[in-house]
Amino acid sequence: MAEASYPEDLLYHPEHDWARIDDGDPALATLGITWYAQDALGEVVFFDPPAPGTEVHKDEPYAEVESVKAVSDVVAPFTGEIVEVNESLVDDPGAINEDPYGAGWLVKVRISDPSEREQLLDADAYSAILV
Image (cartoon, rainbow, N blue to C red; front, side, top):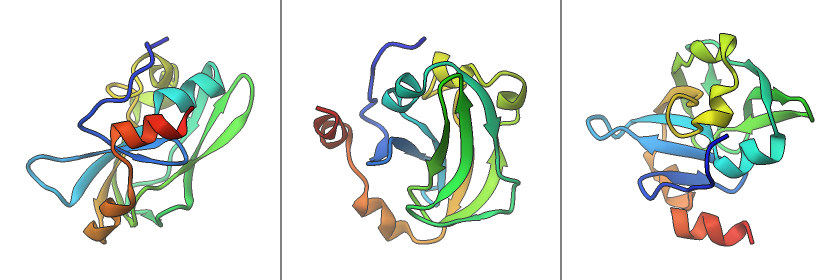
C-alpha cells in the first residue's frame, strides 16, 4: 500500500477525491481518490467506472469503488464530461491502493465550469480537515 501523501500539485475535494489539472489543457482534469480514502476503504477489489461521454456534476457521485470493507461512492469535484476511463483498473483495482495518484487514477474529465476549481482545497487545507 502507498505511503500517506497529499501532493502539492493536486486540488482536493472534502469528500476525499483529488484532481490534477492538465498543464497543456486547463479544461482537462484527471480525477482519483486520495490516500486517505483508499486507506479508509482498505483493499480495493472492484471499480465500477462510468462510460466515456457521461456527464458528471460537482459534489455528486459518478462511480463506485468496492473494497473488502465497503462500497463507496466517488464524488465529482467538477461538473463536466468523462473523456477517458482508466480501464486497467477493471482488471487491477488494487492499483488504487498501490498508487492512488499515479496508476490508480480513475477518470479524465473535460471541465464545464473552470470557476469550480476555486471551491477545491490545496494540499495544506485538505490535510487540515483530516485531523
